[in-house]
Image 1 (cartoon, rainbow, N blue to C red):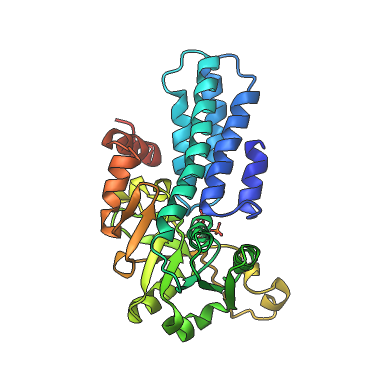
Image 2 (image 1 turned 180 degrees about the vertical axis):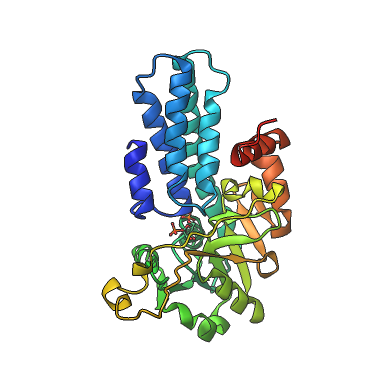
Length: 320
Ligand code: RI2
């Protein structure tokens, strides 16, 4: 699929989930590189940069998206010909997609070990990696039960309960506001992430921080399943994660909203859970306490300070 089509599908959430949108973006850049008719390197770079910007502009919160685009675009490197640049992009895109799929499997394997036989788990939203851990625990023979939230307003909980049902896992479906009522029945909370900041805060679907707060109060452990490419390098230089606010119509139908002129609907899609409410983050490199997010950004994601400066210059339009 080409970048324009992929961008539309990410915007409309036909393609959704932080990992999936990252892989879809890598795939779109690969398709663009393969079909480019650019006859000299600068034209190729220009075309690819426009595609990259379009993809990154679709949804602002999941850092996996700009990280994936950055990794794929780095394939252009110092290429001297269009063919070299094209091959670089294709190679990096393939590498990213493969390593992303591998990361999802590794996290399932590591995360499942934190689930005990007889555990009742609560999950919020629809995270491929969080569900991977749960399904792997079930597959390895552990008797588990899950509570899954509805996830207003987009109801991603429906996808979650279908997946759990298909896997044969005993599942309870609850409205988002019922989490505190059931928290004493829960042994472990497992959620995914759209972004992890340098101070170990986790940005995930709206409501995650309430879930984590309830869990903290009830002394229930919170495990976050997140691939290393969901860690946000630019938070090291003080950049904030932008929380996407989606259309009011997702919460309240327009025909009702029109009759309520004094009412403003607010629809943030994500919230921030502070590190102190998170017990561990399971990455494909192993589990870490959230306070070690810096190490993942520096050691595994491999951003060096030169790249921070470059990113900073691009963002501020300031070139030294
Ligand atoms: P995986 C989703 O965002 C949810 O917030 C989910 O927890 C997160 O991405 C991670 O998903 P949305 O696209 O990568 O539904 O673990 O807004 O699948």
